Image 1 (cartoon, helix red, strand yellow):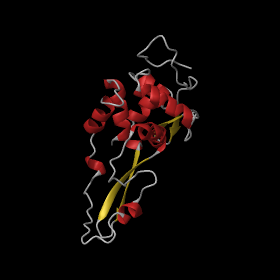
Image 2 (image 1 turned 90 degrees about the vertical axis):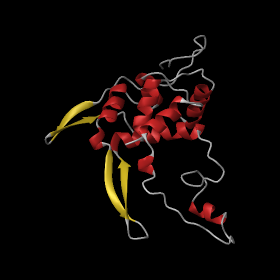
Image 3 (image 1 turned 180 degrees about the vertical axis):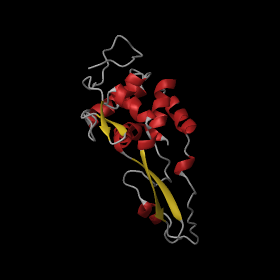
Length: 199
């Protein structure tokens, strides 16, 4: 166990740390790839422990200030975290899908280590996220069907598709969210997390 930076040093607040296993390089054709058998799709920390950690972040008894803190929070060696952040070309798979109107939509799907880190970050963000009541997209127990139910028997229904919505979510905007309440992360931590969340 490793203590994160603590607001109250008298308490012994800790979150689990992975064994010191850094990624190992290997040659794949002309490319140098990295492998870390400890970076997995599942979390070592249970859902209950994640809630406890988030509650301590919320009440500021745990303060996330550094790359090491973020790495411990996401259960990954810091070297692997930084490698994934700065190895941008392998982090996304780009492809097109056809929309109903015949036009195409560009999808940038995270893959590999980035995808795993985003999955590990997801329950932490979900703990803090309080969606507005009218929102239905990407919210647990809501869907396009629950949205449509709200509009049945209405005289007019307007269907709007925002162009390039995901591409318009910038690093600066996400960074600002992680810097502000309820997260209150330091500049380095907010910067790392914003890089994980934006292309």
